[in-house]
Length: 205
Image 1 (cartoon, helix red, strand yellow):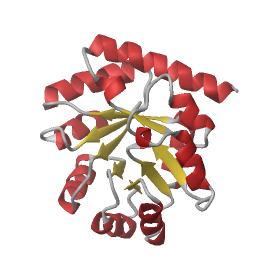
Image 2: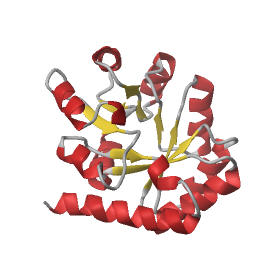
Image 3: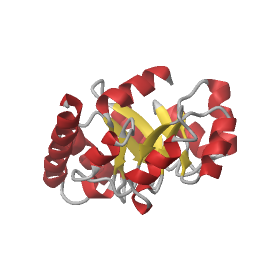
């Protein structure tokens, strides 16, 4: 997890990839890579998502995770397919304990202080704040008071325009989905380049 954490703190962006079928997912993923995004979260809302993971796991320039993990079966399938990390929209206790046992990087989703306490008490400090756009960066900053050691990755409603606000508020990285990966591959590539440039500008401050 330490290596993954360092990578996320460096890249500061996870592209959350959703699609209706494997071929569409691969085309979108390739566009994201061309646009300069290196960390992809292949969601299990994609039918046969494990095939997409297998495809991108062989690419040395990419770090591939599996997202929307809502069962232990999905977690095992994703890991066997070559995912480097797992992400859930909420905290799945069974998945969490299995990943700890196996030494697999797992980022559970949280929204409330109760969610955070549950995840932290199970041994997790890097958490996905979802859906982030419901409350905004100020909410995350408020959570950092009682949870100073937690590292947040806000996801949901992240765009080129607001990504920097989350990073400046203390997020170690952001997860961008719908605003980034909708439309044609050429449009996705352009948006990927734009958000990467925007985040790079934050890094230079």
